Length: 269
Image (cartoon, rainbow, N blue to C red):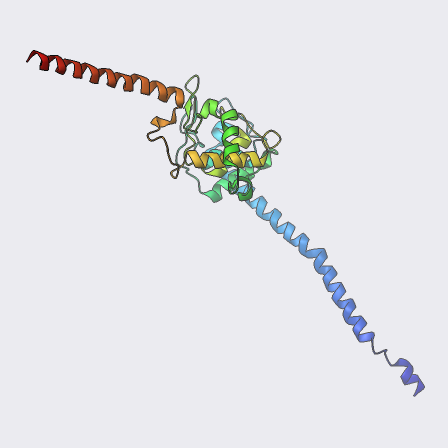
């Protein structure tokens, strides 16, 4: 009896075994689950890069080179980042229809999924600005007045003071910013496409970019109001004032001549 009682397990032994089993299971999950998720993300990224490379070979390599190194017909894409691809291809500027002083905006020929794949491939060639998230370019709660100050200081010289666009030198132009997607405006400020200088976050913080986007939405969208009436293309106070002087004063002179002529006829009769 003493021998049997010596072999009898402690009442808490089963509880200890269960806790050890749970701890081991949790440890295994902690060790392998994150690694499995990271591996899945890496595999998905690799697939996106492979698909993007195929699209690039067909639609981009003839101008930008087979490895994105650039040619005489197109600049290098090494280091431009995913944001530049999302902007250029998303706005239809790329692939370009023909060479010229500037590539105009047109209807996009790739789906957003294909654009993401192209962006993943170009991003793999060298580090550059990534595609911004909604929280980065969403203008909700931004300071419209501050955005106007920033726009007039940094952008109005080319895009006009309400973003209507304007002519530059040698056949180039600053495009109109009317109803441009906020994401594309943010990407343009990040990457500096074509003739535009770049404004990275070190030069123009995210908050200031959001203020500018809010300002453009207020003054140059389908919901914008024109308190002064007909804005004559938004060319600015000098151009619109000159128009008023030439045509307004001209009309007043014509009316004065007409009144004087009829008054003279009435006196003669």
